[in-house]
Image (cartoon, rainbow, N blue to C red; front, side, top):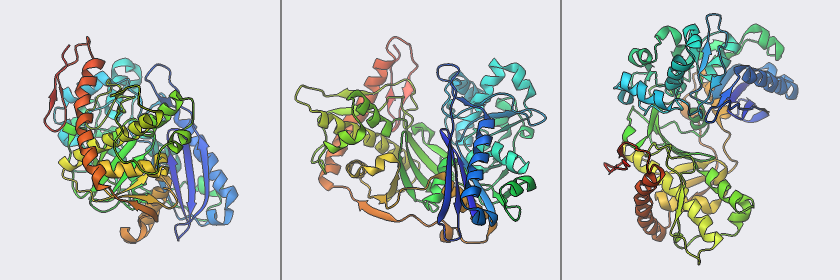
Length: 505
C-alpha cells in the first residue's frame, strides 16, 4: 500500500493506493489563503500540517487494514513558496505563496546580481519564484531575514514534519531560481545573489529516491505496522506528469484549468526564456521538462459566464457540436496578464472586431478560441526550444467540453486525447513515486498512461482558418500592451520569435 499526498493552495488531498494502483480511499481538507495587502498571498504552514494530520486520520478511519500495510509515502505540493525557518526550525513568518506578486522589483535586482540566471536556472525571474521572495524579505523585513537558518518549499516543510529531515527533490527545487537545472545541484552564485549559502538549503535528491522515513510516533498514530519510507517525490506539475505517464521525451499534456499549462517531457535541459518557457527538472533522474503557461484559461470562460449572469454550462450548451469557422470576434485572454510568450503582468484582455450582428454564442466561441491561441503561443515556444510534440492528453475542468478540445486540436494542429475517468492529479503521481522509491520496478511498468476515452484530431479546414486567426491574435498583443501602459513609460519590450514591440510612452 502507498500514500500519495498533494498539498495544494486551496486544499490538501491524500489518497491510499494498492498494488494494482487502485485508489482505496481519499481525503481532501480545504485550506485558506490570507492576503494582508493587495497582491500578497500567504499561508500559515501549520495549517498544512493540521490538514495533513486530518487527511491521514481520515484514511486510517476509512481503511484501517489497508493503512496498516502502507510501505511508502509520496509528496506533491504547490511550488515556489518560501517557508523561512529559524535555528530551531521555527517558522519565522507566514509562507509567501507562488501567486504572490509583491517581489516584482526584486526580480530585476536578482537578474542584475546574477546575470547568468536565465541560462543556469532555466527561467525568467518572476515574482512567483522563491528567490525574489527572499530578496523582498531581506529588504523589507531585515530582522526576519537575519534569523533565517534554512528555506524550504511547502512540500519539503511537510517532509520535515513527517520524518525530521530537510530534503528536496529536483523538480520542486527547479522552481526556486537557486538550482543549476542542467547540473541538478544548487547554484552558489544564485544563492549569493539573495544573501544565502548552501547551508540554508535542504539536501537534494531525485523524485524516485528514498528521502526519509516516517517518524515512529506518526506510524503508530495511523496504525501502520512498519515505518514507511518517504520518496523524494515532486512538485505539483511534475507529480501530475508522473500520474499521466508523461515520462518519455515528447510525452505531453495540456492542463485546461483555471490557468493553463502545456507540458513536454525532455531528455536534456533546453531553456527558452526568450518566449517565457519554463525549463525544469522532471521528478525522474536525468529527465527534464518544459512548460508554457497561460494565466487565464478556464477562468476566462468563468469570467464570461459571470458577465452574462449564467453558468458555464449554459454558455457551452448554446454552441454547436462542432464549429465550422472561427468566430468573427477575437478574444485576448489576458485577464491577469500573460506568461508565455510575453511575461507581461500588466497587459489586459480584450475583445476585437465587435459589431451589432455578433451573438453571445459567437463571443463565447471567441473566448474558447482565444485561450486556444494562447496555448498555440506556448506550443510554438516549446518547439523553438527543441521539443517535438505529436499529441497530448488534455486534463483540467475545461477538458469536459468536447467542443473546446476540438477547437484546441485544430488551433494547435495536434491530436488531443480526452481521458476516460479524468486525471488523478498530483496525489496519484506522488503515490507512484513512493512505489518507485521502494521498489526496483521499471518506470514504464508503474507510470502507465491513463485510459483514453477519445482522440480528437484536427480538422484540416479549420487548421488553415485558425492559422490566419493566429496571425490576427499575435498582431493584437503589441497594441494591447501599448494601450495598457500608455503614459507609464514602460521600457521597450522584446517579444518572441525575434519581434520587438516598442511602447515607450
